[in-house]
Image 1 (cartoon, protein in one colour):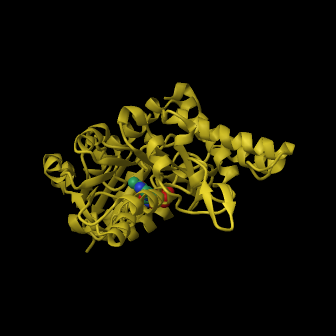
Image 2: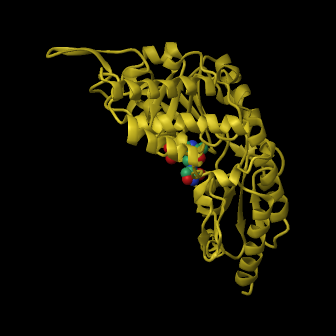
Length: 410
Ligand code: 7TS
């Protein structure tokens, strides 16, 4: 895999002992580790270039501005946006959704309109829409998740009935962070467009794992976080189609986003500046640039194959555990597996696994309504990335077998 490259040696955090054993990090859906080149990019920026952007004419400010704008241009290429001006830097997925909800949503939604979501949305792509619905009189509806355990997925047969002319926006996750389901994003966008609805894709769980092309997907907005794709925390992207962004009002105001300010009132710059009030996160954008280069060096199709193969192997092995309930489909799944054990609470499983040096995540994964629907208070999740290995799945299984034996004693 990855042309024989020793990927693990690129990631310094992996090389440590936890509970006296080499760390097995399987919490990548929450955040990924950073390769040395990304860490170096951050340090280099603060050591050599640190300066404010856009309004400076001195050497350091120009270097910082060039680096920041080069990161934007790189992000446009990374997702095949038609122009860098379609890339807004935000703090991450959550802030990107809030930006669209508060700017586009407040300006365009009214009583009787429908915001269509799915039952598998992360709270970040759910709560902002509930809030804007309350403020505008719009209603939120959900495409149901159907199926039993291994067959969980969206009820696509219900989609046409739900996609009425009242739907102004269909916002959905590309990959479920709990079920591992991969939604047919291009098809969903096409069906929404047919009734005149805009689309927003939450790509938080897919951006680091496969190639995404916003023009091929046919979406209007796409949102993601840098920290889930080997980049730093505190930086993310809102992609928006140029014509839409230009018609949207600012959501935060202040320096950097204005063209003219007078005591009597102000006018705005076009996108992207209109949506980036104040000093932006220059350092993390520059490091995100390096993260994108790093992922493309490994090859995003290769990353997808690697992560999916590990998840399928883990799914198959976990299915052998007594009392296990697996969530989501066996095949065609993203690089993560969630499960519940009959006799052990998810938090206990995670705590016990941690003592074996294995980092898992247990809880509702910011999917409270979905978990309630599934009748589970919580689940355990193992999520995989470029540096994980089949041997680590063996370590996971050995630890889980001990946990099952311990809690199964009655
Ligand atoms: N959307 C999805 C599908 C996610 O999985 C997450 C984070 C977010 C949005 C929010 O991203 P943020 O970077 O703005 O916080 N998911 C998780 C998770 O599954 N465990 O921790 C964070």
